[in-house]
Length: 291
Ligand SMILES: [Zn+2]
Image 1 (cartoon, protein in one colour):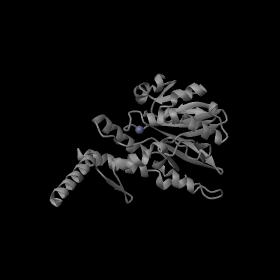
Image 2 (spheres, protein in one colour):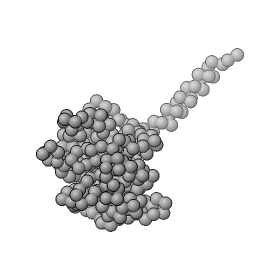
Image 3 (cartoon, helix red, strand yellow):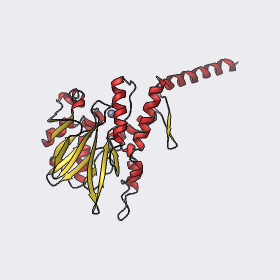
Image 4 (cartoon, protein in one colour):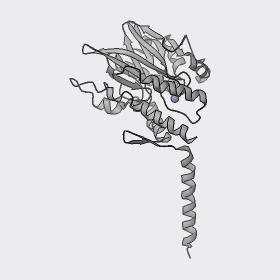
């Protein structure tokens, strides 16, 4: 005889256990512009699968002299100048060869990289710095507040190169082009949002390469102060073209699909400039409110 009561009790128990195992890690949820997000959904959206993190997204021109050379879920931007190029975010060290190939597909050379910049001191964005430095002799520049975390990043025992320490508001210039480093800490202490001008079709555009503004699990008073400052600061930046350290932050896939010769550049998206910041700010406040 099958004991139905015992079976359903066992099923109920395992269901409750499964829910309990998942729930604590994935709350709160916030809804922004009709989309609901949880910490796990944001992380999944940003990172995708292991394959997504390591597979090149078709390299393409974003606007002006800015090119996308990253993977499906980890951004890497090449900024081309007459005096050599700037690479923002080398991503994981194992992706450096993927980035090199993407740079070559666009008709450029990784050996022309003169300056390496980063968005923030996490391995998925800056682990490859030492290898790129080895391959190119480029100068690696980093925001002061992220230097300790970068120093601790030593893939294969390689020391993390830091040739120049930057501070909030510092500029980086090469070949007549200027990038401004904005300290937008919180996700890491030295998380940096980069701004620059790009010109296309005889017009100038303000480009903002946002760092992640995602709050981690623990929000100390120092982290809270950094986020409060960062969310206010990003609202002051002039922005025509929002980009981010993960493509999903600026809906790259969708915009890339809309790239058409003769049509308006889909990466020009003034209305979308603060979308990601609003999602992360809502989540940040929800996390703080829960504590
Ligand atoms: Zn990160």
